[in-house]
Image: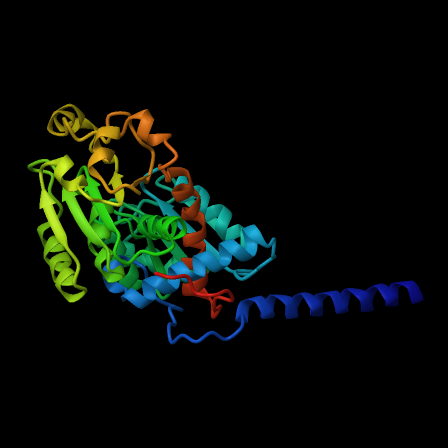
Length: 354
């Protein structure tokens, strides 16, 4: 009986210590910042200020150093669950979100179109309300941006854009973290986009100027970015005194650039247009010849998966290629998003230079 009593006391002490440990990590040490993103949605980086995006990158860098480099255990999302809605398949978005959320002590729930068909078997309004009652946040990888907007309107929990036909904000956060790690700063860098005027480019247009980065864009005729997005980007460029340049010549876009970026030319769901699209992109493959027109310290980014016609093997596997570091950073940045939107955690380590 004495043995059982001792075990009960030890178990109670362990539970109390565990609770105190989780609370310590959840609170973090106070930092000198007025940024509080708890409860927000992340639908597009247009909705976030320069300081708010920098805060997300700071949090990502903080988590990466504390967990990966220092081996700390941070159960910041213990007791929380995430609904992951995937209308489009993905390797990096699924793995980064599932492993990252679980690493922080949370429970991710993966839902395909066989489990949930937005707006078909159940209205978006009803889906949003059901998920709000059972989970703490939703990451949705969908076709229509309007579906995300409606989910955010009807849900009482944060909605995160895992990708839509219009934007891919969580990819751009990983790109910027990668560039900051490589160069030590972002302000003043020139990004050259060579490819389709797609959702990834739209997200760069909505955010690069906020860091003081210049942007040079080459797209074939008929594949330009959304004019409404371009209009906003032009306003940002004026506001932050950056340069924004559009052309149809890939080498002209690469001229003087620090970062060469491309993406798939055939977006998911547009496979039937592949043959005609490939003809339009002749001359757009990024090669070492492209790099000769760039700055002497040029690097290469691609959100993956890549096709050889988009970038040749020599560039893709070249030491200047940051694609695999970029892919890993998808994990740390989505972890930062979830921690920022769901907790009161503040970064513990020194703020990086942006």
